[in-house]
Image (tube, rainbow over all chains, first blue to last red; front, side):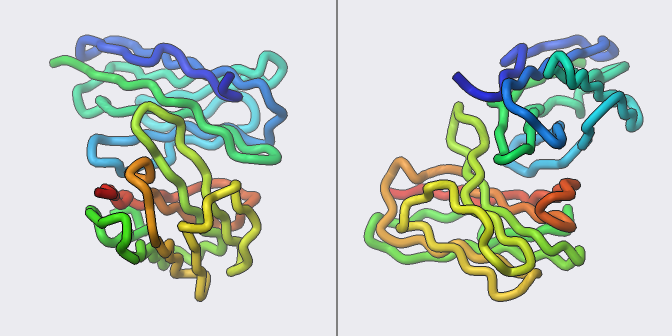
Length: 106
Length: 113
């Protein structure tokens, strides 16, 4: 069993829809990261959070430490949001989820 | 460009070849990382260097040999690889190993034939 589980694995949405990607983890952590990987491999670090909520443009990330759960929300989704979104946690080690592949259709 | 530059972008090598992957950053970061991403698998952390010292080696086979001559450069030397080593190899950097805020390179797509 992976220490970090993401759901869904694949997600297709219409442009403009509100999107939620979930991440659950089973280890003690000091921080949780949301990463975005575009086709071709390049990865961008979207958020690092250890509590509460962070917002950047149309992206919102939340974390509930007690429940060991985080969500990434995308408001007013756009085709350029199509990418793989990866949840990662850092504690004693780095653990990564397998990613959620998002496709936003115009 | 993210500030972390990896070369080459693509590499095809035979199992008897020796090659090196290069990663360079001029962000003033002190920690650098090698990750491996195989198809359908989570990202795997391979090595961590913090202030030029290797601080983590995640049970990586010795056919992968990292080198960090200074805080701005990181190499991954490859020799006698196997086809299952074909993957995307990603480099990242951060201000310090314990502070997060990672910047990733675009990766080297390695194919071992």
